[in-house]
Length: 225
Image 1 (cartoon, rainbow, N blue to C red):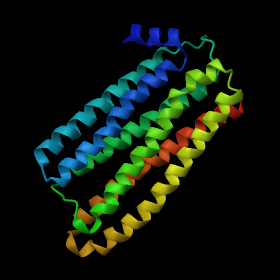
Image 2: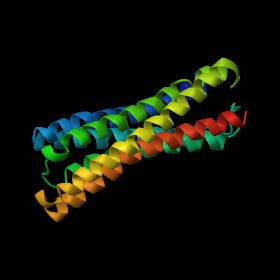
Image 3: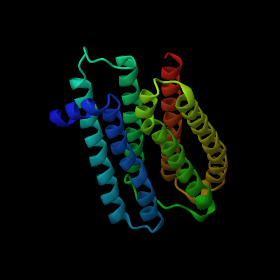
Image 4: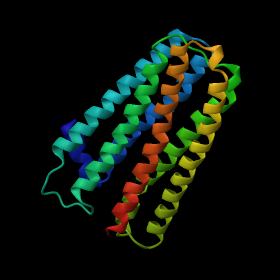
């Protein structure tokens, strides 16, 4: 692992961030399969996907810790070392929230009721779209370095960051509709199931919120150049 991390730094100071982001992406994208299994009430398959997400989150943690431990203090970086580590930390929190969602779905056998299924599916997808938007921003970091954080490339990334904010706003609107449907369906569930769905929605919404935070952290880094 150490050799891999050092090799990544040799290619680009942002390559380790991008490698870590790919681990985070695997966690987030598996949420589609997780809720597909939940919709089918295949709780055994759901448990396996949840365990897979937890394993991937652990791998992301290991990658994060290796980057932190082996990022030389003397290494010349085009951005502040602390800013790079903060970006890494926000990325890791996204993986944490994906794992939280997975764990919550395994606490008891719940189902996605028809009364809020449409809104929930839209909510899930929009959170993943918001995440994918900021993932693209992280993928552009090397190109930003090549352009010395200026010019057309910087403007392109700023527009991408604004798109992440737009996607997060869309999530907020959908979440409002979903919560209204959820409260209207309250009598169809036990109190613990209703509370569990609230927690699942909160954990999912955190993915798009953190995606927006990550995008703004990159923008702040750009403004400091």
